[in-house]
Image (cartoon, rainbow, N blue to C red; front, side, top):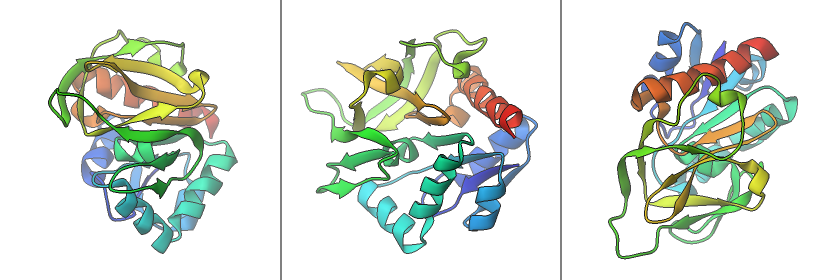
Length: 203
């Protein structure tokens, strides 16, 4: 069973339906016991970083996510959910994140269009079980802030938007995708499917 963590911000049903289309059971939940019992967990997110962290703290799910990550079972952050895995964000002030991965979330700076919205090609920079059987295809991004990981080893894939932009991160069983895999065609669904396979074999 895959837990889609419900803290009041995220494309919960679209992620849940994508998981089910790939042949896995999904539950949208904020219940600690359900989350901790899951074979894998997904932290989605849409909106502002500070608001999301406030929701997580108020529901005490920040601690649950951290304990889940410590369990060694696979955890995937999607879009804002990926950003929340990191140490801090400058979005509308300064906010502390879950600090599961060291790094900062910063705004795009330049004369180009923000938010970064549309289809961009992935560039794999390290090997990962997420990339099994996948070519470096295009996926769908919508974001005004991007992650700067402190550890180069945590950076798995990038894309180009007037600069190198973090697209996929990973350390041990903690993963993040800046784009929406459930909205990213066959490449996105294959990436999500490979994450779910990790959940299956680790249970």
